[in-house]
Length: 201
Image (cartoon, rainbow, N blue to C red; front, side, top):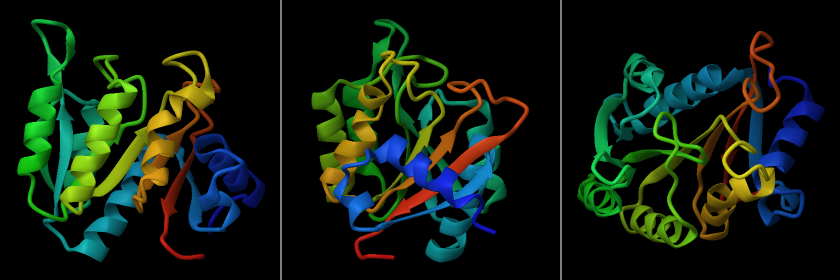
């Protein structure tokens, strides 16, 4: 049911790093899924059942078109946070922070790990740190969508910066991985959903 164990193990190492304490301490549970869409849907359904139907989930404006339908079909209440500033064609950092701070405590925050779709704009390392702080202050559940690891900088490790930072910062996050783009596995529908836990699984 959980998929091919060696694939899941390799996926966790790819995203979190082989030397990640969470990996070494066996604090990450993962399952093989049908690419990014399947990973997102499993994660959204789990959170809807665990946290309660109607739990707010904040997605960026703009975002990948299917995010809205996936989250709504799972029973989550979709909200938006500002992200792209069309005038500067960059990140609306102040607007994003303001919206995340205004989110009700215990909301779900969906973040693009790298190569934001569709804008291509990513926060700087310093901005990621501040976003992490806001999510911790709000006791929010962070859900990363990682469909382009390796595409943003050309370095898969560098593109995993945000994921690894949030784990280091103590977030018990969820991660949806897709290998359609970065491995060219469009028809194979290969993905992984993982959850970083506080305790050994």
